[in-house]
Image (cartoon, rainbow, N blue to C red; front, side, top):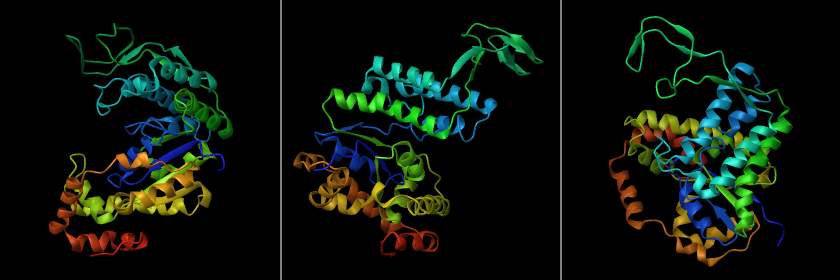
Length: 334
């Protein structure tokens, strides 16, 4: 067998089976996978924002905010299980705290980022600080951290070429995923975030030898699953329109990707015929299929309950907005 793809990115519209596939791969002895979406590669304030902000979209004023938010995301939100909305995340425990924080610090050093003291806090007018009410702006005011949350330092870095910025991002992933995979004797590491689907082009640029796996599910089931989530509006028209824009983004990117850089799998086939689909996934990665992957099985009762939602679906709205998309994905429109 040829050398395997060392990096695998799983993406797809939310509720389309990305976690299901990740759990299958998690059980493969050659694959390192994290049990949760990691959210720091293409997520808000993540690595992609830094790479773009320090190269193609460089602006020293914006870069300060980008680096600050990335630093806080990595050193606080993703390793503090009580930090909303990442209250289930603790990536530092997954990678090892010493390795995790050292890798982030090395990344900042690679891109030449530095943190320096600003000229003081700016407290906006009519803001209550502790027990003190300020009716006007106070500049150059320094307060103890327990009283003021605004920072008294800024970030800066010189502009880099896109090549160098991508190389620094790649090195960060290798210092985290790659190092842990080698430590555990794994040949491949896998990163799962639903929004990888929207930024597949960036991921391929970041890891040219990696593989993007896009999961596809019947858009009607995806739309109904979204409608059941607390973080989505109840309006079915809005949900269908939002999903249509997501699928359109994927179609556009898919047409620009090298054929060898991605594969698509259908959720329905993955859960009904995993013994056929998983060997195909393993072959695309370049690793041997291992039957232990089948120990992960989707919740049959949950799948049945999700299918039951179809009985109360607004099919007229679905046909009008998502019907053409479903047909393009190979699904029959009810």
